[in-house]
Structure formats: structure tokens, C-alpha cells
Length: 237
View 1 (cartoon, rainbow, N blue to C red):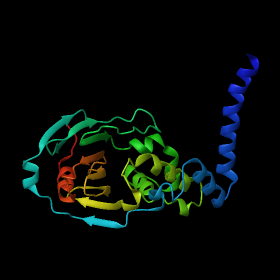
View 2 (cartoon, one colour):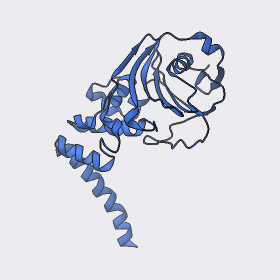
View 3 (spheres, helix red, strand yellow):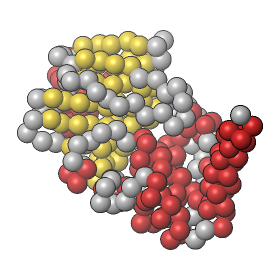
View 4 (spheres, one colour):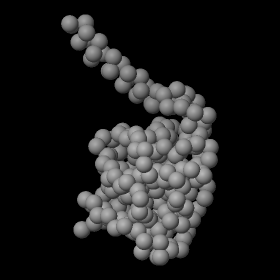
């Protein structure tokens, strides 16, 4: 029993010490090796070597589309969404929690976090010129496994692997930064003949964060319809 207890205590401590050693004393090549061994490389997770290369500014919103959408109100947020979708509100319960979206129907997942949520979880990043949640997401979306220079770069690559949900064939994913009316953020999407996948990361003018992940079975939505959805999201009373 004492031996088992000793192993239970020592093994986690040794692992943490190894992580700290790698973080403090390793160079970029070793950090990259550490990440690729634990998470994956450009071949297994192509999106880790890509970043937003499309910039969409002041996209016109089709108000006629919105008039056909259904209004939804949840704790902390409300939004108008197309018909014939299951709608699920998500919650982040753990720092490194990533739900596997296994619904077999066309589904829209919604998440809201108050201003300062990510900076509150990871206050250490403020020493790396990351002063607000938008910059946190900006660093995350632009993280590149081939551009790891220090532990901060490695951290944002890890966050990117966690934060972006299933988008199908990642070689076909488009990553974009957008500005729609008073909202801005990052949109990752994959359009195909049968299934469209959209990962919308949205900030309003007050710094509220909204994530809308759309699994569009049947490929009924296009970018214009998704922009219309984004334009309607806001904090509920």
C-alpha cells in the first residue's frame, strides 16, 4: 500500500517537473517536438499550421433572412436562428474541457462568456502583451506550430487544438477574421455538397464573447446566412 501511495504521489510530481523543465530550458525545436508528440503535427492536424488569411470587413447583412429566423433566448444570450436546427447551449465547466459534438441532426451550439473570461482563466498571458479576450483569441487563431519560439507560442498552439471544434477535412477549412456591424471576431468554416461546418467566434463592443458552432447537415446555409445569424447575437436581459 505504501509503495502504491508513493508511486501515486511521485509520478505526477515528476511529470510536472519535466513539463517545467521543458518550458524553462528548452529551445524552440524541443518545444515543437514536445507539442507534436503530445498533440500532433501539420499532417495530422493541418489547422495547427494555418491562420486567418481572409479578412471580411463591414459585410452587409440581409435583413430579410433574419425576418425568417426564430428568436431564441438563453441565460446570458439571445440570438435568431434558421428553422430546422436543434439548438444546444454549451457551458465551459473546466479550463481544458472540449465536448465531442455527436448529434446526428443539423445542430447549432451556443456559448457565451462575460468580458475578461479568458484573461481571468490565464492571467499569465497579460505579461505577453495579451491585454484582453479578443487579443487572446487573436493569438490563438494565429498560432502556428512552425512558429514556436517560446512557451507562450506553445501555449497558444495547445489552445488552438482545443478551441477549434470539428470542421471536417481541415485541408479545406477557410479561416477568416471579420467585422460585422459592431461585432468582430474569427470565422472558420468548411463548405461541401452535403455538410457545412461553421465555427463562429464573436465579440461585441462591450467585450462579451459568443461562440456559435453550426453543424449544417444538408448544406442549407451559406456565408450570407451565417453573417445574418452573427448580427443577431446579443446579451439577454
